[in-house]
Image 1 (cartoon, each protein chain N blue to C red):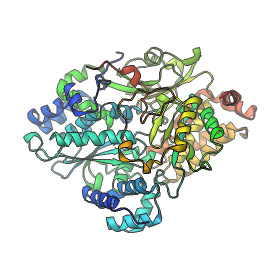
Image 2 (image 1 turned 90 degrees about the horizontal axis):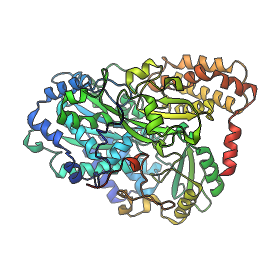
Image 3 (image 1 turned 180 degrees about the vertical axis):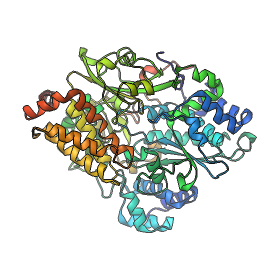
Image 4 (image 1 turned 120 degrees about the vertical axis):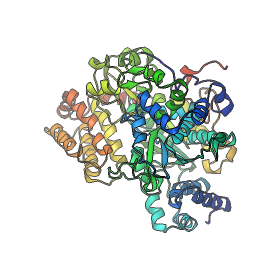
Length: 199
Length: 431
C-alpha cells in the first residue's frame, strides 16, 4: 500500500529540515507507522526513495529500534513495566491479573484483535506512579484491578491509535484523574503534591 | 538544606505549559537578559563560576564542557538529551511535562552561549505527550520571536529541531545519541575524539541533559553567586530526585544538594510503606550500587554518594523494604541491560546474556554452589572491558548486592529457589 500524499509530504519536509537527509529516517518511520500502524518492507522502500538513500540503510536503522512494528498487531498496545522499581510495587501481580483478564500472555493479541499485551523490561519512566502501564503511548499509573478493568473495557471498542482523529492525540491539559476514568495523560508522581493554587 | 524549589518553583501554576503563563512567572527573562546584556564568552564564564555540574549522570561541570569546543570551528551543535531511560528516573519527563518552556529557554541560552545556530532535542520515543508538549512550546516560542533569525534584534539566529527516538536505552549515552540522531543504528562511538571536538555530523557538539539546561535561566537571572550559595562546595544548586519503590509518597522532589538521604526518604517520602523496615536503597538509577540503612545520613551530592560507595547518577532513589528479594531486584536490572545491550561489543552483548541466565538460575532454583563466584567473575570480565559505560554499569548493582547480601544468594542455592517468591505468588493470588 503506497503512502498517503500527506505522509510523503511530511517525509520530504523532514529530509529538508535536517542538515543530513539520513537524520530524517526515524521521523519518516514514525510518520509511516502513524499512518499505517506498522512499517512494511514496501514502506521502507518508499521511504528510501523519498530520502534518496539505499533501502538497506533504512532497514539497518529501523531494525535497531524496538518501537517500530513490522507486522500488524492489536489495535491497542498495552505495555506493563516489570523493571525493578515497578516490581517493588507489585507489577508482577498486575501482569498476572492482566494476563488472566485478557486470556493472553506477553507478546500475544486478544482474539478480537483489540489488545496486544507486553510485559516489558525497558523502564518506561513512570517509577513514581508504579505499577504502571503504557496504553498507546499514554501512561496509566498507580494501577489497581478496577482501573485495569476500566481501561480494558474502553480499549475493546476504541479505535486504534493511528486511526483516531488528530485532535484526540493532543494530551489533555491537567485533566484531573478520576478513579476508573480514562484520561489522556495521567499525573506524574509528584504533581499532586507540588500543585499550587492558580495565581 | 532540604526542599528547595528552583526549577519546580512554579510547577502547578495554571497553564504553565503555555507561553503566556510561563512568562508571567518570569519566563524568558534569562534568555532576554543573556541576549541583550551578556556576551557569549561571559555566559560560559558565568556558568563555569556557578559550579553547575551536568545532571545527566556523570556530573561533569557544564561550563567546562562548553569551553572544550575548539575556537573558530563552525557550525556547532547543541543537543539536549531527553532520552531519559534509566530505570528509576522520571525527572526529565516531569520537568518537560510541567514546564516545557523552561527546558526550551535553557536550550536557547546554551545555544547562544556556545554560538550554535541549530539545537536538537532528542527525546525518547515513549514520551509522546512530552514530545507534544515540547513541540507546542517550540511553536509558541517561534511565533513569539524567540526562535528564528535575528532573535530580538540581537543578531542571533537559532533553530530548534525536536527529534524523537524509537525505543533504545543506549541512545542516552551521548555518542550513541549522536549516532542515532544522524540516522544510524544507535551504537556508541569511541572517545576520543569527544563530541566537543567531533560530534554530530563530525562537528563540535555539546550534549546537555534536560535538568542541566533547565537550571540555566535561573543562573542567568540570579547570578552565579546565588547558584553557588546553594548546595555543597563541589555540588552546587539543587537536584530533582525521583523517588520510587517502597515509600509512602513516591515522586519527584527538588532538594538542595547535600540534604541527607534520610530526609528525602523518611520525611518527604513519608518513610517506608506498610510500617516496614528499610532494607536497602539505590541512588542514581539502575546502574548504580546499592546502599544500606547505615548510609542514610550521607548527603545527596555527587561526591558524598561516591564516597559512600555508590553514584548519584541521574538522580533516582529506589527504596527497598525488608521483604525485597535483592536477587530478584538485581535480576530485573540485568535482564534490562541484556535487553538494551546494543550488541556492538562482546563483553556487554554476551556478558549480560550470561549474567541474565545465571540470575534466572538463582531465582528459579537451579543455581549451583559456586555460582555466586561465577557471577562475580562475569562481572569483572564485563566491567572495564565494555565499549561504553552501559556494559560496565550492568555489573555494578549486582556486584554491590553480592557484597552486602551474599547470604541471600546462598539461600537461593540452599533452598532451591527464591525464599521471597512465595509471598509474591500469594499477592498474585489475591489480585
